[in-house]
Length: 122
Image (cartoon, rainbow, N blue to C red; front, top):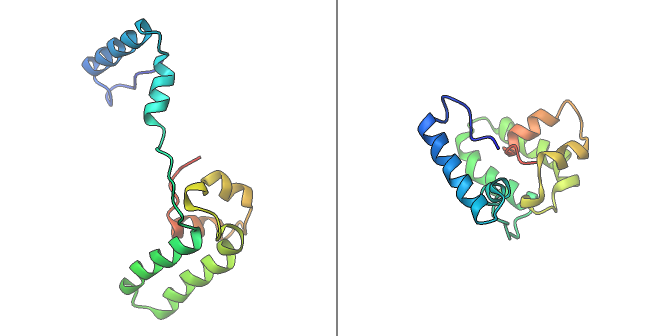
């Protein structure tokens, strides 16, 4: 079981983490499984689709974009490449794996990922 690398985890922290892991083992709990459960994201029960999130995102950000062409490019890129495939999906179900499986225009993919600000969820 890894506890972290030095210097991000100090020796004192590593000792504390190891002690906590041993306590879990004594209780019959697998410390690795316990850590996975603890760090797993809480399930999101949202009704927010990609299209709705896109509209909210663009409405929030567009005011800061002075160039009307730039504003329209954002909408067009997302509407053309993303919406037909993932527009009706719940945002909590959209992961980088979904984006990779989608196999959209390879030239547009990095731009789309940056534009919709997808985190490194797998």
